[in-house]
Length: 459
Ligand code: IFM
Image (cartoon, rainbow, N blue to C red; front, side, top):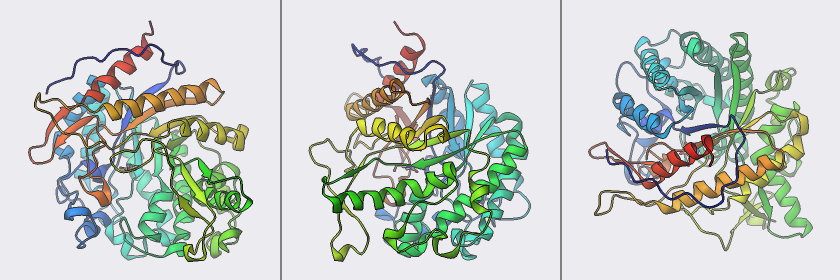
């Protein structure tokens, strides 16, 4: 496992708060593989990836990074970084193969081993309970379109907490409910591949209800609870009233639809979409109280880029249109790179929610780079180093402006299955050769390790 040489220290590096936690993030379907082993049930991603044309080049997560068998090697990589914590997700179909009933002992045993390995390496496990790999049987009953699933989710959370809770202080309930709603249920780009457009909105409420029910169960057991939202600062295309109104409508759908109920106990104004406060009838009395109460211990923010929004044409069929962000670098995925967007987002959250905003942890941030080992065997991914350095500086600036930021988890430890893009987008600090499963730490791995060390022992 060749390790890159330490890179030179930049002359100025804004300080992050003392006690700040450093981590990396991954998710089960994207790294584990072993899809048919030890009693794991079928996930919606097994079904979706088998659909011709759904995923680029027909890639699937059946083997992925084979982390299920190689977790020891991956924990050693984490130890090499000097991490405080590791954010991973638990595969619901590994625990409850048909989405309900008794737990699968072999599934629980895998996470037992992983948690023990992490603790042995001095790394705090931070599990996410749902990162999009729903048991297929639940999808066949209607998935997140049904209210019943929220109660199933809380039962699953209880099973996992009862088994691992003696070693886990804090949990993340859901990963990016916005993306799951839009990509999975509105546009059909992700599993389960439904194309319901605005009729997908109940999946937002049912995910949040599931969060609220699971949070109550976790709290009863003395645990801390977070959620990881994918949030974006919305940049209006101009100061024209129509662009400002479109930007506000987009902000309501992407950001406020999730943060308002969690932090304020109400849904935002969605009248631009012709939707009332009850989200088309799925909100029942008492639901919002459950979703908001008694508050989050931390808000996980997944930040990748800002979104530029303009007023729509009639053909858009929605109260907004997405516009290009020009004059900034792009990742291999084509996403705009705008580190200051992270500062704007966090300061904006603080201004919007004031005392209702819990401490913030950046639970994902990173970029895809078309990187491969060069003739020297090393992976020189300078664009990723620039991306991470810029975003950490922006995070430090947000902290300097008074935002309570507690930690940063980069996406991702290792290259992995990037959903509809298959293995084509590489986000890892560590390169994975998907034919041999060989792991090669990239230059960014050494940079991140050194960045963490400099934070702990500033000169
Ligand atoms: O890979 C994903 C992850 O599963 C959720 N957040 C964004 C990442 C990059 O697209």
